[in-house]
Length: 349
Image (cartoon, rainbow, N blue to C red; front, side, top):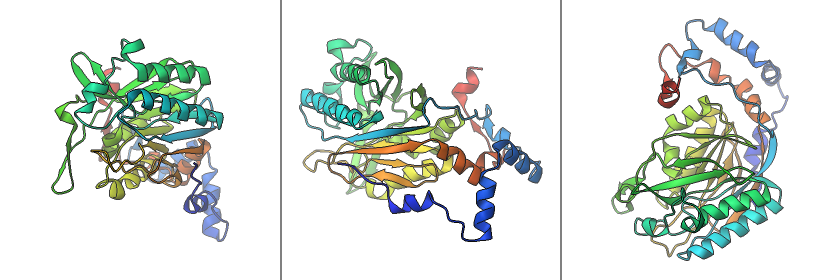
């Protein structure tokens, strides 16, 4: 099952020359970014936009592919781990057969999302092999299909701790990066939902940006999407795309899931992709679903409902530069008033 692009997105992607203001806007959008920067500096010489990021923001790198198909596999998850692994592999293979060069899986797809289940379904990723069947499957299928795979997340056991971990594989099957969920989902809304990941999981300590065959990707897991600083940091590191495997619930999902995705995309003028498990109303934790791809103007390019589905959608990175020409935010920031500090990158210099 596929989701088509929305009419709203189509309208945003096709501006019309209906008045002189529109003509001026489109003419401005074709200006080289260097000239836009010079114009902005001349208009506001004291704003110091280059100082709004410390260290300075990196230039957006030229991606190996500027246009490709993305697949978001919204999977049904059961208590049968072997079934979940085989089911995920079948979905990945089907997506690749449909032309997807990047495939994204949901958060905690190899077993139930619960504090009781995390220890049981956890894998020793460092050991690999029989100690990590979910990890091994993802590595092997990425290699055999020659795709980039953002492997959702699985519980990881390491050094006596449990982590909620996303593994990113290159088209050669090798591990390109590993993101341990930085912000743990501890929530208490009386009468609605109470869940505390910190009862069993340990928070990750590092942001994750990975260079892949389909561009530079910043990784977050579910609750990470609520913290705009992380997305801003990824944008300043030159990410083309942010991927958030996630499992928002029936309380926060209807209110915040799409809102947060569109905000992260619009604020940072890049693509945002999310992938959730399908909804199971009999589960202890009921997921909202609604896996989505959002473009750099905050437009919903493709989405689905709550049932099991695979979205196949096209990413065109040329839209990033176009949108940044429309709204040259990077040259309008007030470095004289505020600053985002990338502590990890600053410390490595």
